[in-house]
Image (cartoon, rainbow, N blue to C red; front, side):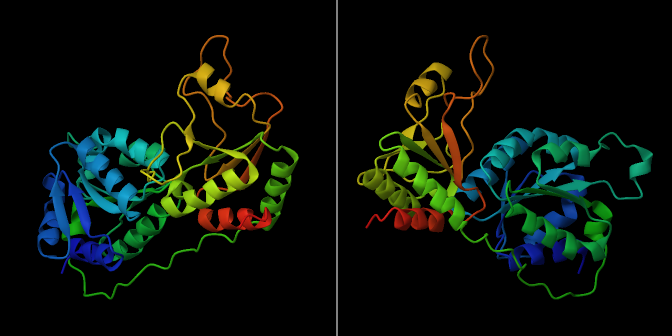
Amino acid sequence: MNGADVLCDVLLANDVTVCFANPGTSEMHFVAALDRKPKMRCVLGLFEGVVTGAADGYARMTDRPAATLLHTGPGLANGLANMHNARRAFSPMINIVGDHASYHLPLDAPLTSDIESLAAPMSNWVGRVKGPADIVPAAEAAFRASLTPPGVATMILPADAAWGAVDAVSVGKVKLVPAPAVDMDAVRKVAAAIRTAPGRAGMIVRGKAARADALAIAGQISTGSDVRLFGEVLIARMQRGRGRVAPTRIPYPVDAAMAVLSDVDVLILVGAKEPVAFFAYPGKPGRLVREGCEVLTLAAHGDDLHTALEALRDELGIK
């Protein structure tokens, strides 16, 4: 048994059963370990941007992280764009970046690079495995970080840590920190603001607040208290179709977005941030809400958005 086997075991113990891979020489021992684990599905990607994009899409649809396997710093660099998209979408993802054997790094081989610096801007967590014995705590930390917003974890796996022999170890599920309890003070403050601005309150839903069940509750609030319901320009995942609640998407152009929000006196954020322009334009504001609009947060991404919406509905007396 080697370090690569242990890493696979930690992933499988935590229901990470898919690895999108674009491997190179440094990753061959991990590839061999994947082949020894029938419960692990390995999907080859011919470009690293496809690998990270596939992992992002998988996470959006399953709410579970997939692993990616990338070859040294240059391979990671090729996948950074979709790691950025995943981070913005709060997608859980575990990037495993193979590196030279630790004793080979001082030789400055052609693919040697500062992987930590490349990964940091797009990652919630970056860690380097120090040796085979370090794989279990590092992999568990990566898994935990992948499920903590913004959700992208990058683990650097030196080749000698992957091929190094280890004794059999027992692995299990990682204990996760539960979502914070609903802030009832925030619920009451939002409900009071809605009552003081009849017909002039808006609510932006994002993340799991845009899923079918939570969106239905947001729709009840919208109908029952005359609150306009909005979605962002880019929504990671939203369930739509006949009979579903359809939020008004805030337009991309600055003028159109400001027009949509022009009569909103109170803007409530549910898993969302205050809307801003994608880019700066001469003579146009960066903030899209008008001056004097009160912006309140009901719950942030990472909170229990469904329960927060239920609490607001109950506070407003909507049946």
